[in-house]
Length: 235
Image (cartoon, rainbow, N blue to C red; front, side, top):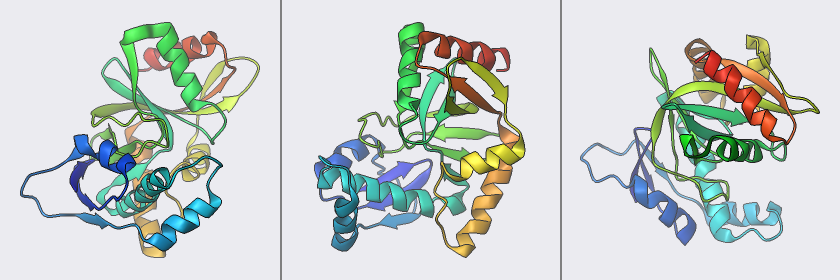
């Protein structure tokens, strides 16, 4: 399958239906040369299966493997994974990022409960950000983290919000040092020395192209309202 993901022509050879179905909307039939070719070995799949959560399927692990490889290989194309739930509001994409289990997907569902069809999620785990000289664009990928939400869409990046659990809801601006620390663990950070330099360049570009916030939040609807007011006030 030749796909166009974040404007990168990517050839991948899935064997299982999970990735085949998710990649179908990304199929590319143009004449551009292939930028990235991805193949998942049996040994890699078996290693992932041995460490997977109970109930995981080999098709899900294949999709996870393709995601891991793409997100590393895409770095030289000024493209970076931000492990997050990508929510569209007012024509922009807002990325809500957190460690697994904190509740990023739950938080964006709160937005949908409060704001209805004014907002929607187009990737619930593995969107990427394509960095240009003057703008950052959030791109969907055929990698869903098990949610099934993986639309082929592109939207200007509005902001990146790091979530932290708390009893009350509050938003603060994140400084550059904190951004780097948090972002490092939410992207494809285990890379070669040669790729690491390009990754740091992507970090620097992103710092200049968007805003970063930390949202301390609980699991109530007020969390979405607090975030909305802060983000729209600074949109």
